Image (cartoon, rainbow, N blue to C red; front, side, top):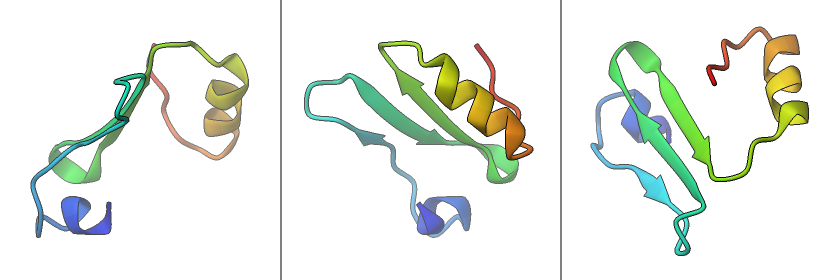
Length: 54
């Protein structure tokens, strides 16, 4: 992940079954996608000062 955020790598991480994906974007953005919504995880991210998007 660090290499992607620093621009040293250019890849995404995906579970073998495709149920979880982590992608990296411009300006140190990291995108996490799951096939099952988890309101607890979204609330925890907000508490930590992150900006989760539906």
